[in-house]
Image 1 (cartoon, rainbow, N blue to C red):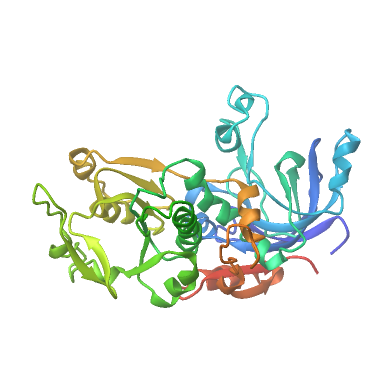
Image 2: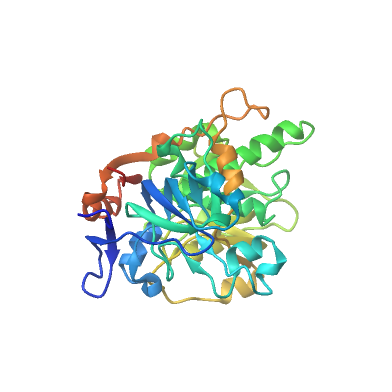
Length: 386
């Protein structure tokens, strides 16, 4: 391989599942940086893309940490990025339309002509080099390792729920459905918001958020977050419907409760104000609606290549609000990753290294994605620099 080419895991018409190939090193456009990728992460969205989601063709991946090799900018101030270790927002906005002119989170996520790193018309991170606009870059603090920095994008996606102001941590009862990688990141964030609410409001008792999942060993990873864990098997009957004793039941005056999971009390009325679907399954929306109180909010974090029949009746009858939630604020995610034992808010550090199941070399990317698809796997990372 010569100096003008690099290794990359690329999806194309001949290789719809992707293949490690030798491709040209990209040249940064004006305003872009050329970044040497140190590590890339494998996300469930990558697995969905292999199944046809978004009809993507190109280099896969959107989670990364790397070092800036060069910057194609006439502004000399932008040259300060050279040599810095960075991660980056995955949405590439035009920076010229009426949406971009708002300079808000809507601009960050919803430019109508945007491309998306490794997802939509923009080569991604599973390669030795990538290009990204300088305005998308965020410097990684020295205290955050490469292994930890990979979690910036999924952690930012979890922080997006807070940024959207969908939860009042003092009053809202919150349930997170799904104990996959994103569900656990959401639990880490929501749990710490709950602990902050308890600390800042000692005169009240904020309701403890609950993570509902299938795998005890996965849910145990968020024990220090402030979240409560509940097994899905305790909520569902053998026919996969919600257990009869957990069906909606309201006596007109008081909400009665039953004891579940080591003394955790869940309302028979299932009065979760907010239910977050992070199941990665089309069936998650239906189950979320059965766990949400009337006039509550369901937050959708799952992206799936396939769908299923949709019954709108529960959403209309219970007047449920359904809100999509996507990419979030990188600065907040990096702040959380930087937490140490002596932080001002007295919160437990995240220690996200516990989520990494295995690392692969870039030349082993095909094997890495197959391994990531196994149910027992948590986070898979790909070392891209040689």
